Length: 109
Image (cartoon, rainbow, N blue to C red; front, side, top):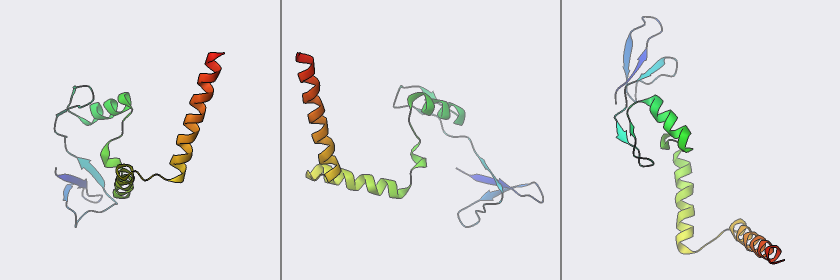
């Protein structure tokens, strides 16, 4: 998708490519391609609909996550598949079991 910025001096729109990107101008984004939401099947055809859809369903666009975040999550998935758990995860699991036992014992009384 082509991106443009407005020149401060002339007011004209200038195409932005990776090498010419500057942070002092205003970026104008083109329209987004329509797509069908995998969440509820609605058709999203513009940015406002996309923002409203994300807010309604409590989701965040993938573009907002950094590559470091994805690398960290990939490591967590790899540990999950191999059966490795961190100390925090073991402690959380034990606390959940303990809380469940206590809740069930209280319910019997």
